[in-house]
Amino acid sequence: MTLYGYHVPKMASLIVWVILWEIVGRFGLLMLFPPFTEVIAAMGEVVTSRSFAEAIRITVISYLLGLALALVLGIPLGFLMGLSRAADKLLNMWVNTFLSAPLSALVPVFMILFGLGTPTVVVTVFMFAVWIIVLDTRAGVRHVAPSLLEMSRSFGASWPELFKIIFLAALPEILAGIRLGMIRGVKGVVIGQLLVSIIGVGALFSLYQQNFQMAHFWALVLLLFACALSLAELVARLEKRIQYYAGERN
Amino acid sequence: MQLSMTTAAGSGVPIAPVREPIVEVRNVSKLYGNTVVALQDIDLSFEKGHLTSLLGPSGCGKTTLLKIVAGLLQPSSGEIRVKGKPVNGPGAERAFVFQDFALMPWASVLENAAYGLKVQGVAKSEREDRARHYIGEVGLHGFEKKYPHELSGGMRQRVGLARALAVDADILLMDEPFSAVDEQTRRKFQEDLMHLREVENKTFLFVTHSIEEAVYVSDRIVLLSPRPGRVSEIIDPQISREISPDDLRRDENYLDTVERIWTGIKKYVE
Image 1 (spheres, rainbow over the protein chains, first blue to last red):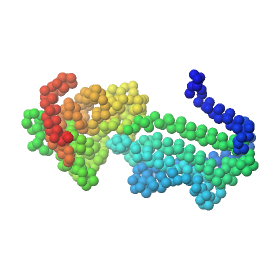
Image 2: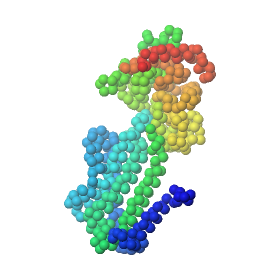
Image 3: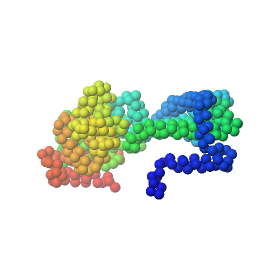
Image 4: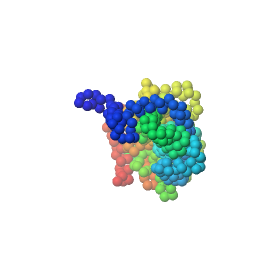
């Protein structure tokens, strides 16, 4: 971007918002917003606190468990739906329903089923992440060029070999599904913990809110945002390395 | 074979009988669902070492027939014999060249060309040597490390050709191999195919919808008519191989044959 002939770096607009935040905080215009500098100071305190380390540890564990479960079940399910018309007919409606349903509403049900602890959060992450992985895998498998399979068969390929071709040909879509699943999973872990509210980041949020430590509260929000964005960026980079051939298929 | 309706180009005499059939199609019919008849009672023999074209308007089942010969499709009735033995699936003596090239976008030119050998269980170093040889043969020397998306359409089909040649099959089945490349590349390709036929001792089955292409490259043309797909005529173009490619396109015999085929096909084209 250029402004009056000067080159302005991409993130420059953030500075404007930060200054605005600082002004609102300094004049006490909104009770919820302490000055930005205070939030930054609190961030140091939050990061170094023991409860934060513990919260992050449990959050990362539940997130990874839920995501692993979503991958292990989601990719085969997507394959099944992509390969078998009967399976697709049976499952497609449900997968689409779960994909667009407000899953947060189900978390209380998970709490009843799995208790007020990590298992509920893991299931929440799983439920948030899995459906898009299923659907993207299904789409990828569906769109494998028939001639590629014929080619493999014409040389006498066995089933495992054909399977490998399908997997590699569908890989760009599968990775796109994984990226979206990972981002949805972050939502899942935060929402799950907020609703359970006695473990992980959710417990910290409750603590800060109840004691009205708004600077700490916002520091935690910013940290979570930063984590989610970096995670998405990381997967997007990985995806780009595979992407080069995604557009080449016809 | 339906000799009664088959004649050599323009002369009115019966076409030469097939002396050494390498592929035989016996009473093959193909139905899609229970109503659509793609092929009906096809009975054909293909001469060893010759290039035979399957020519016809769209919907005549020429690609279906080729895929049945390849073992990629099962006939509804009838059988395919290759070197005298009935077959009902793909086999190492046949290799297929695809209309859309069917290259693996994630694999390099070398890996693509070596794929058939890999599936057949040839060791890595040997298959790469053989693939390299044929990549050079089709004129892609120096492109071994490139990926399909870095190549033009014509070059991609050369990779497809190298892959089919590398497995050293006796029979090359080509499904409109030049239809997805531009006209200039296509002509060059046809000339290369003629050359290839001379140096490699192989039998070619060639599907095309281009009359000119069929007359130019074929020893024999099998004309198929649509709905249901049947053999309507068999023509031996008898174009002298001495003629240079540029003179050929003005050759009277060539033009007459093209005209004659067009007259036969015209009634099926709306």
